Image (tube, rainbow, N blue to C red; front, side, top):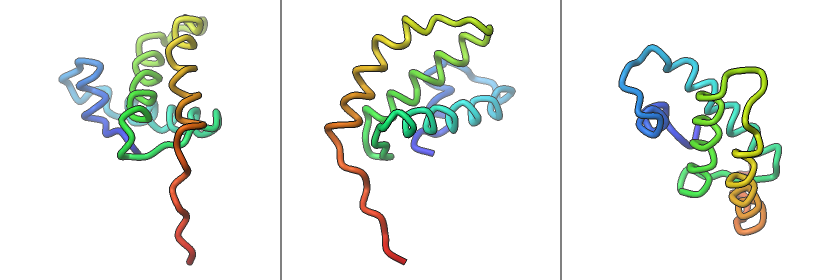
Length: 95
């Protein structure tokens, strides 16, 4: 998890703990979505954290079956492109 539930709640401006489970699920899904898109994610990369937050906010605020994907795609696509081509994947530790 590169972004904590508390960070996402702050970004969403949510104070209660009622949605913590939902927000945690959205964060996990956002990371998976970005990895599947080829993005390199790191806990120290603020751009990667922003991409996760953007996805979480979008999915949290657009829970209906038909969302506003065109609004999301414009900003997020440029971030994903940078995360794909401007960063190296973390070194894997040999076991």
